[in-house]
Length: 187
Length: 403
Image 1 (tube, rainbow over the protein chains, first blue to last red):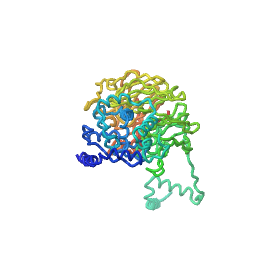
Image 2 (image 1 turned 180 degrees about the horizontal axis):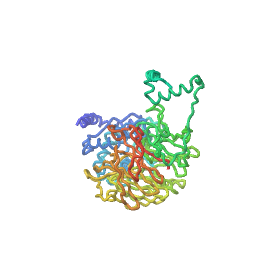
Image 3 (image 1 turned 90 degrees about the vertical axis):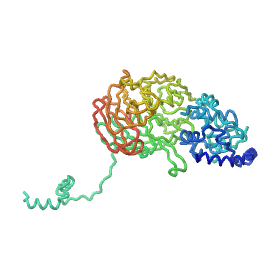
Image 4 (image 1 turned 45 degrees about the vertical axis):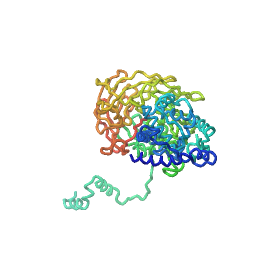
């Protein structure tokens, strides 16, 4: 339970900083300063945080990195960013409708919801808006049937990223695959 | 006539040399050319090889070892090596003129600027002719359907996953990248004559990819397999003459799909039932005969015989090496022969000759499946089960053929 212990100490820090999280996001929008992490208690968003992390490492970590950190590889950086996608209903649904999530070998919807909550709340490091409701089994069951198999995913991601910038004041770099990616190389 | 004493002295002086055949030759050579030692410098020459023959097979040296060795199954002899890269993909021009190697390198070994490209080699001199830059490719070697060439040899298709599942199209006549298109949720590229491509998808369907118009049109069959409980091995068998693809699932269900704009998938049959055994189940600890390996099936197209690497084991042992090769008559849906093999081979192919030869590769004992060390290749006559040739340190990766 070393991991859970670590998480809890992280949560204390997050809780202390939680009060200023909204203000920090405002700063982020205006000045580009990173939001203070506001990670909810893992047990409040996951039934089994350990299993969720194991599932992430096994099913996603090979490409996305065990800590969601893959810069400068040409793929979406999750760490400290992915939570923004919880900001609009469409972007939130997109995370579950991605073919590799929707068609995941994890068939148990509650288990997949846990894993995706690990992604957005733990790897996202406080980028999910304060008060964001975690994914539920019902929501995953519904959205995974609508896998994005007939859309250009690059264009869809950019459309949603623009939405996050406009509606949620996400940093403009959310349009890119990772923050330091040279503009124009984002697909 | 030499005396016994002279003979003794000669023998004593040259006893080490004379003990070897080489020494004996040197002795004869020295006396034949005594006083006429040549000072001419030796001319270095480079041999050329013929266009690929139906009896040749191409073995990737290994998952971690670069290079693809060419052997002739008729003689068991090494022919040449193509300089494919670690985690590269080899494609062979169907017209026999070129070898294409899809590779990825960074300017500073494992960091720096990433470069993805196809190197073109002349098939007779193996001379490097140039590169075709492409915008990306999946970094997985040892798979047959990540880099395929159209039947006329004019177009190459390279599967890409950076970061969206997509396909790069290359014009080999112009040696230029043409375009890429996204293929969300599908992989494993298959030629689809008159249409473009087909691919296997994670929802259990087969996609038809229409490349005849300006816009790429992707349609899918209804799901027919479960990518979770009973996936299909990626080494599906494409048969241009019959316009079909033969697929094998982890539990040994054999599917045949008619290709076209709207592919149709026929009802599968169980490999075990075709051998008079109980059908395998997709459940833990189910003991049965299962297909397994990195390249477990090979189709002899003219006769319609499918060869499969089989092992006795549990469900979900699809990477295990084989103890038998099953010879399946696809039309009759019967396993007509079971050939015992040694060394637990994980890689199989069959030449398309009238009297085909099976090629299997077994990685070295004690090194572990998938270790990437070069193992032993065996050439087996499927009619008799006889091992015609055994080649040590041949490779451990994919076995490919020119046709």
